[in-house]
Image 1 (cartoon, protein in one colour):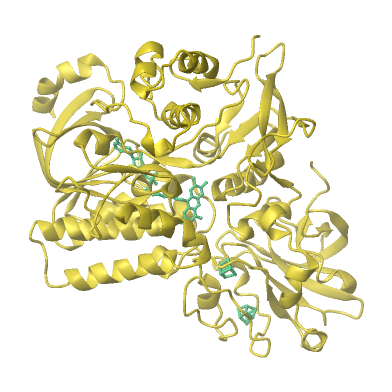
Image 2 (cartoon, rainbow over the protein chains, first blue to last red; image 1 turned 120 degrees about the vertical axis):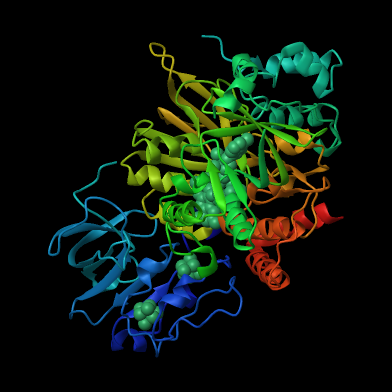
Length: 165
Length: 94
Length: 363
Ligand SMILES: Cc1cc2nc3c(=O)[nH]c(=O)nc-3n(C[C@H](O)[C@H](O)[C@H](O)COP(=O)(O)OP(=O)(O)OC[C@H]3O[C@@H](n4cnc5c(N)ncnc54)[C@H](O)[C@@H]3O)c2cc1C
Ligand code: SF4
Ligand code: SF4
């Protein structure tokens, strides 16, 4: 449970998971920000207006699933590192998950990495498709990793180079 | 090594010492400060003041707001006497 | 004796904004900080900040510090004194005593003073709490992010507020293993997004746990083992619930309390408000204390956030300048804007504690 261990339960997550029909259409942002805090850069980062402008800085972000193109420009702007883009159309068997990753070493494109769930548990292996780490990301690189489709709503972190713990 | 719970790190005052004093009836911050030097060291009570406040409030069963805080006298930090004594010269130089 | 129109004490986000705002109104400002560079807490914050554009949201704390410091350094109305600690305020003549570079003593008479000295870390009482290896979270951050030194290999973090969560994240970034984050409260005090960030790294967060004792290595005398135990809903430890962690570092992040010595010396009326971190100065909506001419801003006025510290600083700076007659007609509007922004920042559920504290202060 978020309030006691920082891990959202299935019930807490449910309202944030887009319906299957939308996921079939292509990439979409999933914002795992569940608490009203004084913060709004996600809404100013989105250029398509998919993240509705906040009336009050404490508002919860909500994604207009029709307007969202899954461009991922909001990912590195969120100080909470709470935004992910999931593309279930990546291939027949795989989904592409884009996530913020502020650790070294960064994976290379094409590299295989461990993929982790929201509690940091390794749930399988994935292949890095893309690493965005330009001036725009400002040292919050965005890594896109291909994972088995059934893990698209599970994988939220990666580990490069095996378990160091 | 004997185990202890330190309340004032600058003057090495332990919780045990404070508790002993409170049992003897010393329950004001001023008294405890005078006896133990708790809060009179290098940091001038930045760490221990809140801790002592909470312990005293617990001991006399009152709200921390009711406990009288010790007087704050300048300087708020230990400084070398020579710094102050040399002050006028320094000002003329600088 | 040195003379200043407005002396701003402390160059963190609150002091920097106060100096800039007063200078913008045309006043001459002397900004004093005990460190060798400006920025206060921001210097150590490598993560991106919350807030809105007005408070530089989504920019890393360290970069916000740099942006503000650059503005200050190039402002002709602001003089900065670094490596200078204000250690005394003499209420009889309103003179400040400043220790410069630990060797010079400078007296300064200022017409207005803005105290923006921030806060200091709270500590915790438990057996052997003075072992080497037990640090405050701030000390660990300074060690890591300013000096590039890691504090050890395995860490137990005590405190799941924003500071405990963020410092844990930074430790993991530096390759240090955080074994667990514990907190005596039944729920996480920090923002959930921060908690999720560390949870995703595999760091367990245990609520309703406190430290029972720390034990040293027989040879080195340094921390080797930490024992925690659960607390019940009346905050009483429950025997038999102990857990042991083999750690060489324990990091204490149980909150901050205002660094208000100068305000006490000046005789400002203080009030004990736990929601704001301890004893805080009573002040009006210009951020002026009960001693006329002394203003406050930031954590020293109530432990909160950099975003609100900046807005309070702006308010204090504007008001101090205005009281000296600097007003090109924009004061009321600028003040209203800063007040509005503060209200916005504090309006949500996480601002509830601050609102409660401020209400108590105003009563
Ligand atoms: C780990 C951590 C993470 C944080 N994350 C966030 C975040 O994401 N978002 C956010 O909004 N806030 C965050 N904060 C809080 C934020 O850093 C503080 O609220 C903010 O820095 C307070 O600003 P300030 O100017 O009041 O004090 P400070 O930043 O503490 O600055 C006070 C300055 O005064 C100087 N000083 C003190 N006494 C004297 C004296 N006697 N003479 C001369 N100089 C003196 C100090 O050297 C210091 O430079 C975080 C804090 C920490 C510790
Ligand atoms: S992915 Fe792109 S379009 Fe969708 S919310 Fe984020 S920035 Fe907007
Ligand atoms: S930027 Fe991130 S943390 Fe801030 S409100 Fe948006 S989603 Fe939440």
